[in-house]
Amino acid sequence: MSAVIDTITAINLKNFLYYYSSESIIMSSESPNGIDYSRFRPLGYPVRHRCKIPFQPMLSLPLEYRNMLKEIRKLDSALDTSVLGSDDYLELVKDAYADNIHWSTKIEGNDLPLEEVRRITTRFTEGQYAETGTGPKQEILNHLYSFFAKNEFGLPWDKAVLKSIHTILMNDVNENVIPGRIRTEEVSVKGSDGMECFIACPPGSIEVELDSLLEWLNLSPYDEICTATIFFHEFESIHPFRDGNGRAGRTLFQILLQELGLRNCKLCKFEREILYDSSTYYDLLAYTDSTGVYTQLVMYIAEALLRAYGEAVKEFGKKDRLAEMDENTRVLVRKAKEVKSFTFSEALTWIPGIGPRTLRADLDRLAELDILDKRGRTRSMRYQFKDPLRERRMELENNQDRGS
Image 1: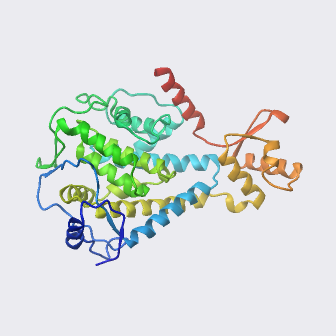
Image 2: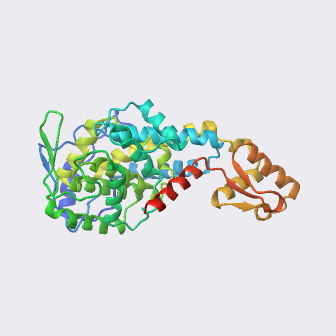
Image 3: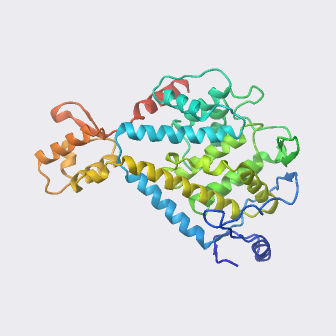
């Protein structure tokens, strides 16, 4: 039996020992971290949602998880300290956004190819796209709008947050679904062969089970990956909406990761890493439902995030300008990223002993490298770290304010 980190709110010791002894992780050389997920399937279908009030998930993890979590946090910080030119940064952001949206919508039946999603993403970030009406393109646009939504999703969460995300994502996507409305009918998930695979929470229990889940979320004792994964799974199990639960759940998962500390997860192509093996993905969701054991699902998600972060750091590293800079310039960049904007006089206080002429030359060089923006003239001039999406974000926020 492998060593275990006890990060559990145990149902009781007897149940914990039963689950751990009978369902412990089996290692395999085929998985990046040696975990063989193929045996973690439900014993039969359909799997039924289990009512969990109060929601008190049981969790045990192998020691390898601690190392993965530490590395993911390290890689997130590395992305935070990368310094790219505005154009380079924008290209990598658009690529990550498009890739994540493509995989999250593809698994739900959107057949737009990745290149088309990239084209829509590029036009959207350039302010050339508005609503198209209905259909696959509108679904892509809705996901992009969710990335730029005004910051209304900070913790603690309530049901209004869940409804808001669903409303954004499902606007003009399915004429049989009212965005943001909790379902009032029984639903089940069927496979491509028509076989019933999963029976969701009864409609009469949805509200109270969501309340229980959200109460747990807002006080979760677990780290960011465990918390986001467990929340995502239980949200999918409750299946609060008639359609769009997967898309809403995965968007909420990403927002949670950011809110809980992994601020740069949006720069990583993690949806592909999670969803490309759709059979394993669905098997693990069903297995977790049938057993109440989250270990394997958390490990699977952590592995996917680690791969995605590693690839993102590699790609950002190819464009990073930090290696070209002396220590004074690096300090200027780090401080510029921390503040909204700054003056020349304020920057003089950041680096003890630096002369005005040297500072002016450093600031001018950073502007030439497309890293800083300069606004105003002479003494009224202000500098700010260049965000190529700032104007588009402000435009969308202003539109939201006018529409509210």
